[in-house]
Length: 353
Ligand code: PEP
Ligand code: MN
Image (cartoon, rainbow, N blue to C red; front, side):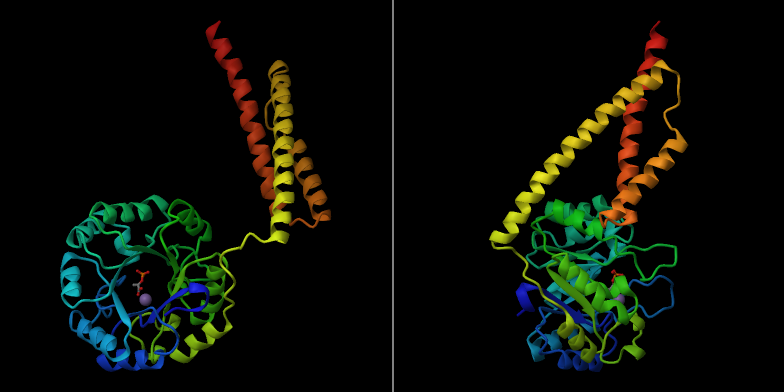
């Protein structure tokens, strides 16, 4: 079972706290179209002495949830011992937490403990924005012949105060998608948000970026939760969020009107590239002139004028100041690179003679 347009849904509390809490949460979300029920049994905490999970006895509660409500159930593993206990309890899905993904020793250990297993594994992004490290974790699992792999984007830790608990860095998630197109990518809006009021907007953004599923922390009594209290939804709030989300079509069906626009865009892009090529040829001539006349490359008065003039022009075309400024900074930087190359040729020639 899944949500509209094949979007997958995983929900359940951050941590399993008691048998009663798991059963009550599961009971209240049994009809929302869940693909997996989640709960952390072993909790990685930033500081010692916080609640570190109920341990292996929570596995029995998860199994009871599966038996009572027919959900597949999943939990986080971070060591060989966790893997052995979870496999023994026949848990249906395991996820690798963000702090574990950042540690290649642990990822290797866990993937070896799971060698050849058919169980689905969901790998959260590492806590630091390092795409190679994330993809490296997938490579380690594949190297141990574990191939039912999924990714969870849960944002990245930053020191600065930001709106959300973790920086989404959507571009990194898009880059992941481009490099790993066969791997289903889920979004965990709960850990990005840190506060329940942001879950809807982050989930909608993920759906619009064509994520394959959502992982939303849900607790029968979030106010009293032992972990991540501020970000967990009540079952009722989960239903409200799901009711408000817009599930747009995920794949275009070679549609006539859309194709026409795309043809127009292709022609314009072709012209844009040609024009940029012409502009850079003139940069070469300017580099040549500066070389002959012993002039520095960067001329601040000219650059200020050029940037301002083009931002004004862009705004008349309804382009944003930020876009125009970023675009012209990029063009200007490339022009500087070209001129630097020409001027350094002069140094090389001087050194030769
Ligand atoms: C969790 O899913 O409860 C969890 C601990 O997440 P993360 O590893 O993303 O912090
Ligand atoms: Mn959590």
